[in-house]
Image (cartoon, rainbow, N blue to C red; front, side):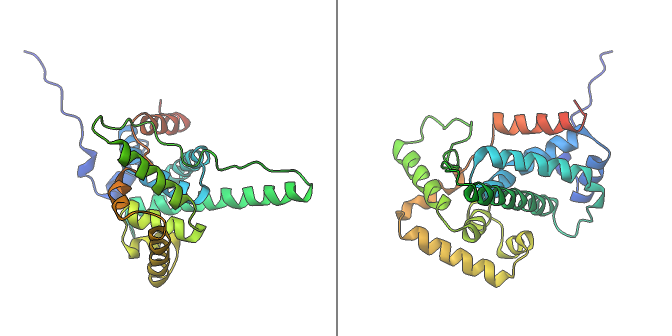
Length: 230
């Protein structure tokens, strides 16, 4: 009699608290599920602060390692995604402050700085579907460029609200801001974008700043390797 293999465990059925407990127990499947489920949001959030794709990837990886090292402290007062997003925000802000200190030091020494943001608008590795038109691609590039030029406080709010789809309350929780401040910054960022972008650019929002496919898989592999689970 042939023994049938048991079906793969569905981690999507777990509550955030149960998923966190499995991660704390170093369950590779649970950790991979958490990474795959949150990569897009965390990358976009880090990019909104750092405006550099390589720096954003490094910040996300560091945030994952910090989160999984301390996931036993997760109390499920907010969602696991919100908890992770808050960690990546703190990691990215810390890196930005360190970079600003480095810049000030170099400027005092009279060193000319190059533009550090040349990679900020690089696209992810996920290939576009064959039927995506050239016009849509142009709109997407215009959108990413326009969002990159928003002031720092506006950009992160815009990415979390309009691209990641968080509510005003969730965004306020992640950033440690009053809800009213989130709404004001979102309104002002929309107004700035409307001054330079065509109305149809909204259709490209869901595809902006991709972080999927091979990028997503590579991030999971690096985190699992750093945790000694590969």
